[in-house]
Length: 115
Length: 114
Image (cartoon, rainbow over all chains, first blue to last red; front, top):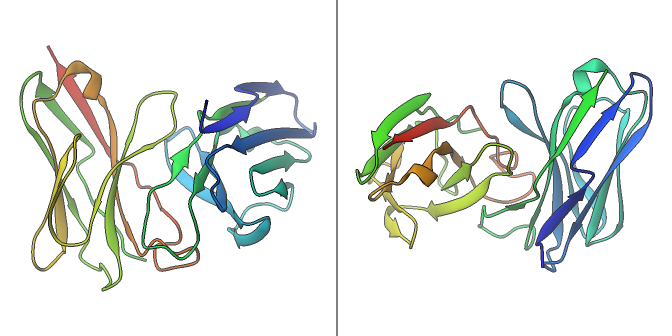
C-alpha cells in the first residue's frame, strides 16, 4: 500500500548510458514531481506534471526527459549519463495544482551512481 | 522567491523541547510556511504548515509572529528517532507560484542524544 513508489532504488551505470527511473503514486493525486538531491544535500525540483501535462521544467539538461503515461505515473529518462548526474532522485505527488497546500508526498528515492 | 534562513545544525537531548527558527523576511502575502523532515536515505516528509499565529498537530507546533518574517517549529519531548534534517519552506503552493514549488535549502540537521 505504498503511496509513492520508485524503481529502481539503486542504479549504478557507466557514463554515456541511457537509463530510466519509474515512479508511481496510488494516492489519486493530479500533480507529480521529480527532484534531484545532490551530494551536498540540496534538494531541487526538476519537473512538475499536472494530469499528464508538463507544468514546470526547471533548468535541467535536455538529456533529462520526463514521461507521464497517465496521471499516476511519471517516469524520468536520462540520456548520455554524466558523472555529475550522480545523485538521489525523488519523485513526489500532490493532490492538485492551485491549492494553497504545500504538502507533497515523496517517494523513497533512487540513488543513481554514474561511473 | 522568498528565501529562508535556518541554523545549519542543532543538538538536543531526549525528552527536551526543540525549537527551530526560520527567517523569511521577504515572505509574500499569499505564502504559507511549511516544514518538512528528512531522515537519511528517505524522501522528505511533511510535518506542518501554517499561515499565521499558531498551528499544532500530533507531531509539532508552528509559531508564526504577526509580521510573518520568521517562524518557529517546536518539537515537544524529542526522542532519538527525531534525529533528522528539518526544512523550512515558504510559498503559495501553486505550481509556478511564488515559491517555485518547494525550494529546499540545506535545512537544519537536528541531532538528538541520549
